[in-house]
Length: 435
Image (cartoon, rainbow, N blue to C red; front, side, top):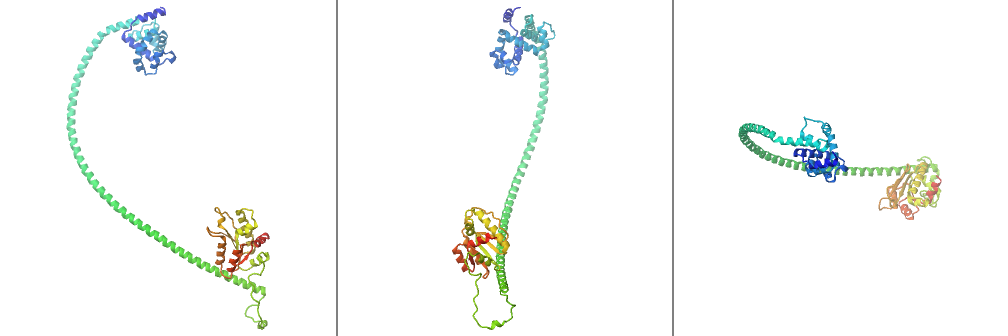
């Protein structure tokens, strides 16, 4: 049979409804397996649906396309044959399959189009005609089963009604017990609320008392701490005053003793208690020479003579000396060079040295390594170095040799009134150069 004759025969053949529904189901299943390029445009939107939904929604479009589009029908038949290989091969080769469903055979024959496909469709149509008789027998059989099921349902319903009555009675009893339990629980909750309120009130009273005790304890501790601080400050002040008085006395005594000893050695005086013949001759004695000989303040030999005095304290106006000696160097370099040179001087002469720098020159914390025996002080905020130098002079006991190195005339005059000797900065610079 030619393709034209086949198409015409197909168009003239009317499929029984069971066969048509099975053809649409098989074609809808195959539609989801075909490439998008092989699917006709009206069917592409159904390809992504679930198989059952696809068969239901595409039926009105899929049937006519299978009847008119021979290429699409062949692609669908090929895919269906792959899914139902044994039965599809038998139908395609014309092999009878008596045990198979005639509707299934007719649907596969319609898609695969073997030579006898029209006969297969006709056989399925004949089976559909004989179906009402079989349906009557099935209906009678189902009616008997329905009557039997109704009888069993009535029996089950009676048993269930009895059980429901029993459950209702039991439910009434349980409701009564539940109400009694709720009443007891309500009374217990009321009692619990009252006891909870009492406990909270007691807790509040206890907390208030605890807070009051803690406040009193903190107040007493603060008072104890304050009194301890006052006592400690008083003890420290008294100790410092006793220590300062002892130090001042010891320094003065050491100065007097060393001066007397040095004078005795210099004059080669004999031990005391002996009267010499010359002591009986009357005459006018000369006045005592001042501390150190009279000489210009920049005399380096005078500086050495003053440093040889017993217990001498050398006080230096730091920046006055450094800016005279090294005016172009940074301040931190000036400070370090001065204290390093003074360290060498202390190691030679064993004297007490204090260097005072003006704190107004500082822009932050000072990093300075002072040698052993060199005391370094910076004037506090709002106080100039000159005032700190005067305080150092006033702090020493009367009679102790004190030498102040500064070119500032105001400092020289003020320390001279306090009993100290002043020297120019160039004197110390010359002495350092020889160290």
